[in-house]
Length: 197
Image (tube, rainbow, N blue to C red):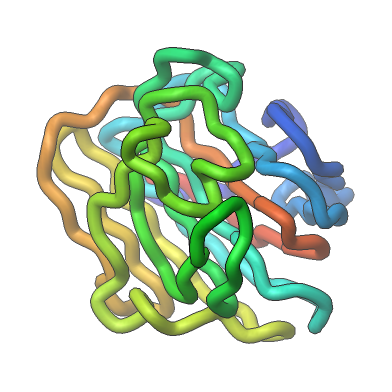
């Protein structure tokens, strides 16, 4: 029941330049800049989003990933409730903390600042919930394509990378859109995007 996703009606929030390909099924974020999101219409709970992610440069080592349960303007909303999945290539200090290498999922409940996004600062509204089973302290590799599957339900979220279940958490999760996320990382392509119920 998987169907290709037309990205031409997806919306940008925050920083970044998101260039949708002519086939409308892939998008590249080109800038090294503050946090940015590119999200789809409608609510996504009960659905699965799949595709491929690839960083097309050896420049920089920062965050790529996704948002789940995202509503328009949640980046700057003072009282949001969405999930942030981010994957960092290498550990690096910034904003008064060490941004650790690896894949993580966090709950965002305040406007996202550069510092809170980098540090996963619970007191500033970015509470880390889990790290990847095998990629929790392993970074992505430039010019390498990774398949992803995001399963988003009201009480369970799963994140699969290259067919391996990296994250599986239970809880109570707000509905909202699927989206792509970049922070301080240029030339990231999301492609072959499919959604299934």
